[in-house]
Every structure is written in structure tokens, then in C-alpha cells.
Image (tube, rainbow, N blue to C red; front, side, top):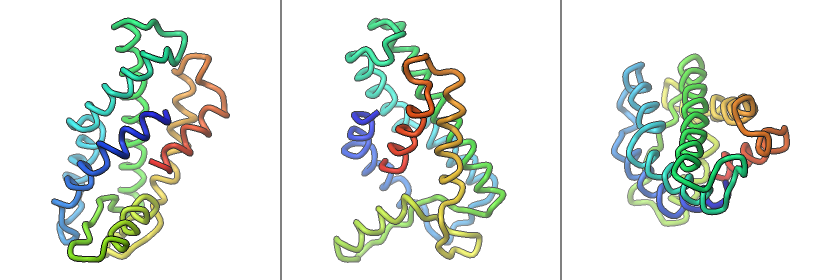
Length: 175
């Protein structure tokens, strides 16, 4: 998980930030936009590529150890990650719809570098309400631990303890 977070931070985050910067704060985040966000975050090219890198790395280091270090094991690891991402994103999208949250990143163009960095960090913990005002990202706060504990039901024994779910939750927030 740590390696996947590092790969995301170095490779995936800038690409996703650019994708999100193409969306304007004034564009409505209606049901269709929310479904597009869910599909992109779950099965978009960047997410699928990050999943392949993560599954490859985990296969190399034989984690979880219950899976083989062959193509079958790679596929199981890829599916494990995809199921977790889909669960988390679906929970976040559903709760966000109920609570009126817009999780899209708003690019801070023409601001000093430090302000832009702070905006990215804050964006991991904040969203916007229906009026466009900042609010805590409650849907993400609920979806991250909820999906990680739920995924313990289909994870192999070596990764299905409460401690494992807590570690995955921490990685989600650091990500």
C-alpha cells in the first residue's frame, strides 16, 4: 500500500489534478456529473494504470502471500484493489449526493506556489457544498474507513484484520 501511495503521489496525483482542473467550480455537480466522477475515479485510465502498477508491485513482493506470484496472482491483486476502489468511491459518491458535497478539485491558477500546494493538501480534507462554499469532506471521511473495514470480508486472511483496515485508512488520507 505504501508503494502504491508513492506511485500515485509521483505519477497519478499530477495527472488527476490536471483532470480535475479542467472542471470549473461553476459547473453544476448534478447526478450525471457525479456518475462521470465516479466512473473516472474508479475505472478511468489513470486509476486502471495505477492499479496495474500497484498489482505488479504487490505481485513482485508477494503481498498478500495467499496469491501466487504469477499472472493469476497479479489478476487477483488487481481485482482486489479495483473492488476496494469501487466500494470506496461508490460510498463517497452516494453519501456526497445526500450531503450535497462536490469532491472535485478547483485549480488555483496564478497563485503563488505555496498557496497552490496548500490548496492541494486542503483539497484532500475539504469539499464544497451545493453553494460552492468549502466544507469538510464528510463523505470521504465516512467512505475511507467504511470501505476498508468492509473490504476485510473479501480480503485474504493476511490482510483482513482491523489493524490492516486502519492502516489502509491512514494511507487513504495520506494519498
